[in-house]
Image 1 (cartoon, rainbow, N blue to C red):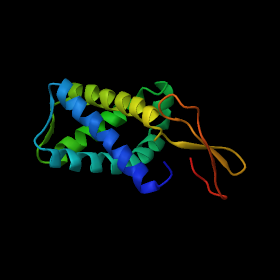
Image 2: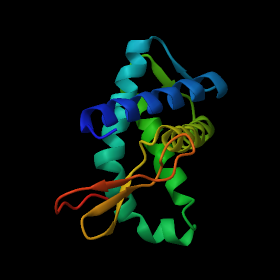
Image 3: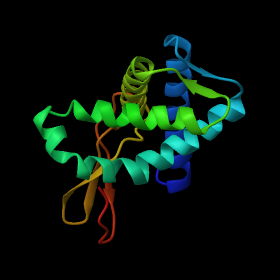
Length: 150
């Protein structure tokens, strides 16, 4: 899948599955309608794209000291914030936020590997490797011009 818009839609669909699964499993997380779920997914996607890297940068010593477990705190805070800002989506308490963020993270990791929508990394020169080939396929090599994609 090479078209960026299709990759974005597929990544949002994967995120929607994760949020819906978290709402089904965790008692403190709930959403009203599929439209609410769509708003939550878009907002979480924007937070993960813009706000999360800034938070990780500012809390880098904490993240390193906890050997990466501080990322769970950041993800939980973002999920809790979305629960406070979106009408019809509730996250009741810190435990629900932590469990929900763990379920969403594991679901995203699994489905991104399965669908091949994981992040791309530069290997050498102008050749990129898609980390997840999808459905057990080996990573695919993508010829690209001089671009910096991570």
